[in-house]
Length: 149
Image 1 (cartoon, rainbow, N blue to C red):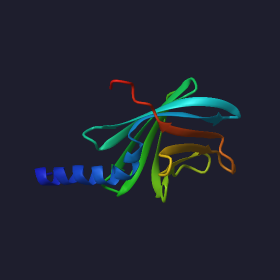
Image 2 (cartoon, rainbow, N blue to C red):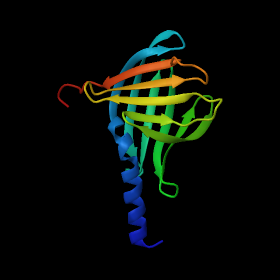
Image 3 (cartoon, one colour):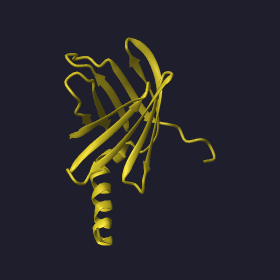
Image 4 (cartoon, rainbow, N blue to C red):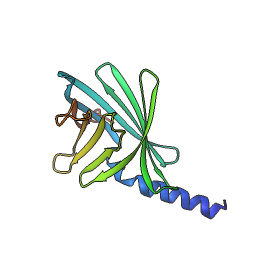
């Protein structure tokens, strides 16, 4: 692959990832999981020369890490999700008018991210198959910037 082809791959990867870039930053959230009130944090950073987004989510006492990337070969936004206990899954991601949805297997939960441009808040919802109400729902707002930063 020539250097022009390599640069074009970077350009396509970054461009395809752009719709998820609204998540970049530090967030604090509150909501419910499995019937219990919870708080959460979300840290989203561009990594690997801006060709992927690393998402670290801490919900209650648990943490997950996801990597969003645009697969240039298939023209598809994808997410790799890592969570305890040592589970790894990869899913295609579909863009919606106001966010994105993980396209999971029929027996796996669906994750929906929604952005509200009026408030600047992001909502994360997890739906188990055959459920109409989210099992987990968190509303995130930008974390306050420390004074003097």
